[in-house]
Amino acid sequence: MKKFNIALASVLAASMLFGCGDSSDEAVVGISVEKLEDVQDVIPEPVATEEPVEEEEVDEDAPPAEGMVRSYFTNQWVDEEVNNTRPLAVMYPINKEAQPQYGLSNVAVFYEIMEEGSMSRQMGILEDWAGLDRIGNVRSIRDYFVYAALEYDPIIIHYGGPELYVKTILTRSDVDNLNGVGGVMGSDYGAFFRVPEGSTSEHTAYTDGSHVSAAIEKANFSLQHRSEFEGESHFTFTGYNSPNTLEDYDKAVEATDIDMSGCFPVTKSTFSYDADKGVYFKTLYGSPQKDALTGEQLSFANIVIQRTYHETRDDNGYLAYQMHDSTNDGYFITKGKMIHMTWKKTSDYGPTTYYDDNGDEITFNTGRTMIFVVQLKGKSFSKFKVNGVEYAD
Image (tube, rainbow, N blue to C red; front, side):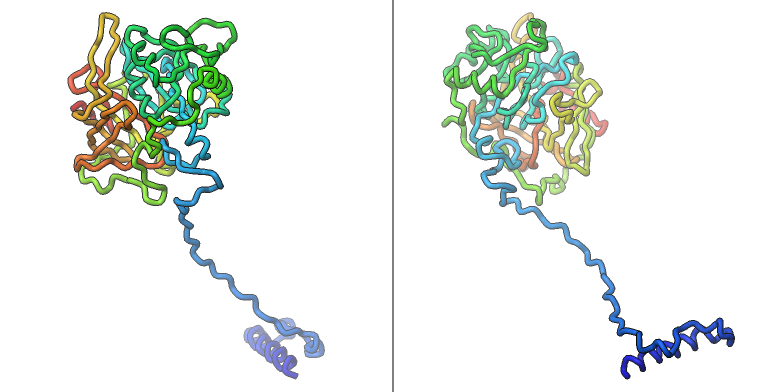
């Protein structure tokens, strides 16, 4: 009876609603009373309400997989074996005809420094290199690159160099290097090959993870970090959930477009900031600088412009840079901002440390770092632009 009363009430209500404007039978919409016993109780569906979904924060202290640790050089998660293994310091030519190059996606820290002839050269600190199918091409080294490299405790990969200026540092018992041309600066230990095979022209010398591993074993170099290495984060890092935006610095300036062509007039290295990804994408000769293995454009979370005393050594234009110092300055760039800084390096294996104008060590954001070593004020290659503003002092 209860079911009948509910259904009947519904029919009457419907009749009243639809019959108000027309008394004809056709205007009445409903069901016959004879069929009311077939009507079932209807339980209304609950109306779904959308609750705001809060983005879950990543637990920065929890590795994404067992056996992973923070990289010494980027603060990103890597296998513990990668952290224990010495990186490679690879000398990459920056000549236009030498592009693109292999292995750049594994660069943790990247350097560009001027050399003779108004040309610059690159050095990449590569981690997780053992599985790489090709690395290079590889060119010659200068001694100031060796001094920049030692703080990472690397195996140095190069193809010769000016013997007069690099022999002393490369033949030190603690400096492990694989030299493609062999001789007094070190042996190649079978580490290199040519592409195409049999070529002897420049920009055709390469290596790969398996060749380097075999050469290290043959040379009896330590594959694991040695006692000279501190075994700590190379920079002071912050995490994903608390990035250093430089907003706390009153004198921070906007830095979304970095033009280094005043310091490196041939290569014209520039950077453009991608706010969504939080990194700076690098160009060379006006085009994206990419890894030939992956097609990935080079990008960096941090950019350092490090002013350094330099001098010309001889009539050939060979240069010297003072890589150990505590008197010079520069700029630190990250997250679309730039601040002035000073830097200090007091020993071969001690890391170069960067300080803000308050004397506090600068906090780097997790990710790769680009370091430009540039000449001091008044020199030919000391100017650069940030968002169109020239800096030269």
